[in-house]
Amino acid sequence: MSDLLIALRTFVRLCEKPNFSRVARELHASHTTIARRLDQVEAHFGAVLFHRTTRRLIATPEADRLLVHARAMLDALEGAERDFGPVRGEPGGLVRIGFTTALGLHYVERLGELTARYPALQFDCAMTDWQRDMVEDRLDLALRVGPVGDDRLVVHPLGRLPRLLVAQPAYLAARGMPASAEDLSAHQCIAYAYGDVPARWTIDGRERVAVGAFRSDSSEAVHRAALSGLGIALLPAVRVRDDIAAGRLAPVLPDSHIAPLDIAAVHPSHKSLAPKARVVLDFLKAKFPGEPISYPPQM
Image (cartoon, rainbow, N blue to C red; front, top):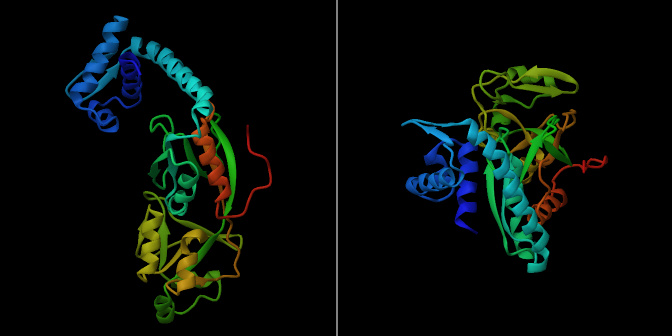
């Protein structure tokens, strides 16, 4: 790839993340190299693209104008690579995926099946329980929970993910097994929530606030808290099935109805899926650990 194209890609990332150090870490380059690439772009187009201070970069109007052309040029290059990719062989290259923690761990444990079929694939998995910006983080695919409602994204429904109330058997032996949802008020409920927003559980059609001595914005932390006996947790079934089978956790109110989570895979609508991302999307659909959704995905 020519030096100018490399420099343009660096310029685009600086527009999306206006911080030399962050872009340098991401692109595995030195701060000096990133600055030199920006100098090259500015010299080529004869324009000042950023006002630089000791603490931040501020894009100029010329940078906003060039960004439109740079993205179009790089998207066209990616399109040509996709067009000629099948001639060179099977799909390969780096695929960046944004996972929720529970589902991400499920899929990561099965990625060996995909790499056995497509050994040239590489993966960069951003695993968090909050929604990531796909453009800023350069994600090819991401998982979303619930309605998406963003026309910048193409939505591929994966299915519905069941959830279970669980607790450590020793905790239940000491505190008693709840006989109904009303009994939960006498128990420590492990809350999964963000900030000061209450954790709300809807059980048998009635919403209640989960109250206890432990709360976290990480589903994995909630899972481990349940395993340590801190109380009753509401978790995706895929995360606790092995624990229940091994006796590390026990189901609570197994006959109660808890609405499953609607899960979808999404990708940016401004460009089509590359073959490497398409095979990963097919893998996400095939290995989804919940109930399939019958309506067709968006095209």
